[in-house]
Length: 261
Length: 379
Image (cartoon, rainbow over all chains, first blue to last red; front, side, top):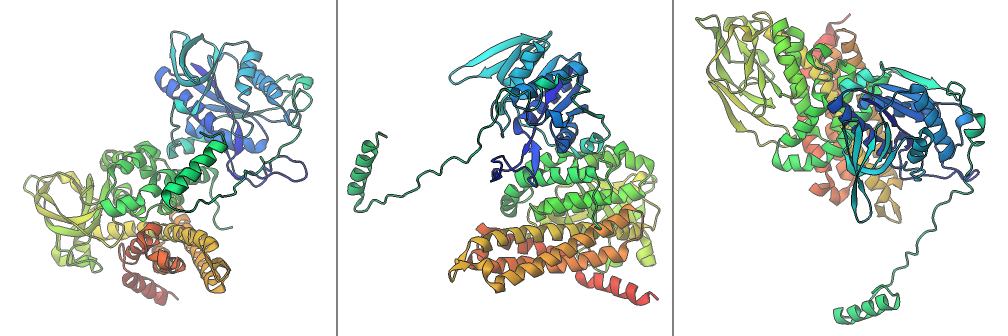
């Protein structure tokens, strides 16, 4: 089986600061990590490889430091890594990103399964996986909480709000996974030592034969108008006093007045 | 910069740091109250960290002495007990790594890498610092094997170990040159596990007495040449003293982090206590000493990795790091005031854990003899 796993490097912090000048997230000096759901996707790929054999390629589009995320992917057990890195690719929205990722998949070729984390924790759109699958014209299964491969089909449980769907798609297919699907393993020291000897390739948009109008900011139909912190919630505290019965009555009256009960 | 990790070493460091935060640190209080954590040991074994510096051909990580120092340094930031157990495991496994025959290495090193627990048995109830005064003895058996009699005390990992490397007298008249090393598997007839020590600290590591009652060992249980046991033990202790430096640095840093967070939040006299110079100055001294411990540890590890003799340097590292670690943990406890006296705030446990570092694997006093006499003998 040839599996391609798409990973994104994201800020490793809850404490995201915004640059007051540009309104963008400040990434300089902020530690980065593999998007947690992509780690789930890598784990799913490794488990499938352990069962069915084959190879796993990790692919990421990002600045040069995104190579660290790919090195981690190799240490977890991927066999080779590809970084799509080019000024022209920068500033991309999900459509332009998916276009470039699809080009990379085409260049690698001969894949059976494309795996994505459902969403990245910085952008949170959940669009990149499905968009890439569309560009490649392969069937897609999203929100997978389980994955199995049998006789050329991939079979997944999709966990929706009130139901679980069991869906299958003929390979080659794309699957986006949720955190429920597995618990990512730790990279073993042996694999860490081996990781840096595995092949890592960097491709530019020219290497991928990208149409310059479909990549980067130019290729992005959507653009971020403003990034801002949500307004702080009202944390005024109302104190109830008196004996417990009176306090209880007053409290329930307040809940009723706020239409909370 | 003296400390310059390779890319792989940084990745190993980051992995152990993450693993320690998630898996080891949350269990430290439980281990203090309940002892050795077999479930946690299994998780650690699965990562392969127990074999980080065992060569790849034996199933290990193929790392060097710096890599293993990194691993034990990071683990100590979560638990002194776990770090100490790993130090003792390596102390024993390394005797086989450096002195084992090909057959012994092929048989035992994969076990050590995979998570079987090893323990190093030198100390006896009547002989600690005076290691050449041990009384356990081995005589040849008629079938070419060996008969072991005697006892050991204060052996870390004893009681949970799968393999023991035991030092015993094969020639009682020859002093330290009459000691030989033997590989003794757990469960062998005549090996009796005695009482578990009720220790002050590092209670998550198992320590108990062993007694040997006419244990019949096969001929190939002898490790290294006859009479080379003392040398084997001293060489292994050089490496272990680097581990102690790393443990001291990690434990100290953990204490400092808790104290720092507390100092930045606790308010007295209208401001966080971190703003009072009396408290601020403590952190200046503590941070400088931790940095010194780290530099000494990693520099000595680099010497070992380069194949250089490092006996004096390892002893200096342990002497300085262990002594300062106890004091640092006490100072951090003091920063917390009354809360420092509570088990809930953890630092009292680090104080109890730290004290061992000044005693085991070479007391401060023995190390001062070693270092002092070496320095004074140099031109």
